[in-house]
Image 1: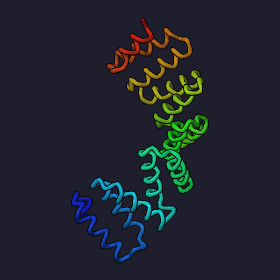
Image 2: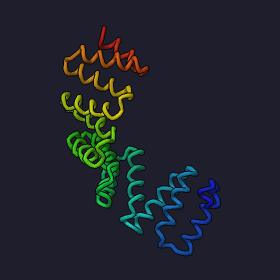
Image 3: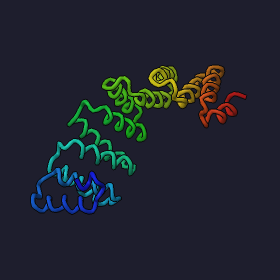
Image 4: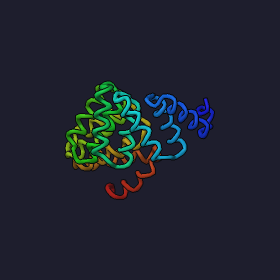
Length: 205
């Protein structure tokens, strides 16, 4: 109740008391970690999350939270291991594949990233970022036709997302289809995308 009311000091005290009374209660450490996070105590948060996982290795939300923290800190190797552990616990959780795919992409494992985005899309076919991220990975491999197909699918999910037209315009330009690329940039301009003017100047003189 203290946590819900935003009284993090008393919430911390209550969870600490719980831990003193029952030191093997994983949920109390996870709850205190949430309070530490809210108060900006990164070390306390990390310590309590680690203790939660030590006590209960299949505590999914803690495993996933630790992986996200490692990702945010830029420790991609640890993050990949963490997201893999999360997937082993919950193989149906599409966001874990998305996050692991992003780690692999940033690590240079483009094929591994595409494989994870494939699973993300299989589990959640209407999740726009699955198609967007996979399109970027395909473009990295210079497979611009596949990149265009994916970003076009993303545009079908959300036709008002102007950045998709920027992506598709770039892929078309890279495919030596300048007219089509510039048409996409113009459409992005009409949708008031702030980057569209610069792309028009750069590619469509």
